[in-house]
Image (cartoon, rainbow, N blue to C red; front, side):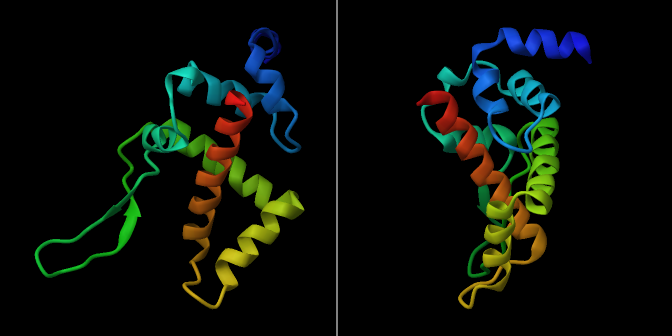
Length: 133
């Protein structure tokens, strides 16, 4: 673990992500290992596709199916972001409020897992913005 900490501190982007409360060294090192150089992505949607969080609709002909995540990306990255989202929802008041809003809104309330996946996508967009701007 000490070696991972030492190597992660050599990466200039790691310090920016470690500034987020409740995001630790394991999360940052895992994220940077899976994503690599963030400058090769132009938009956060490309990162969402890499993680397998792109929305797809299961429909055929006249049948209109449900919209789900594609799961065609990197499984470890998706798992890592999901664990961070669960931690943030339980400990961070802003993300807890966002989760509460998603699950209790009057128009189109989300189920708990759908809400967590929306928070994972938001967290990915936050990471992208912090590293590029």
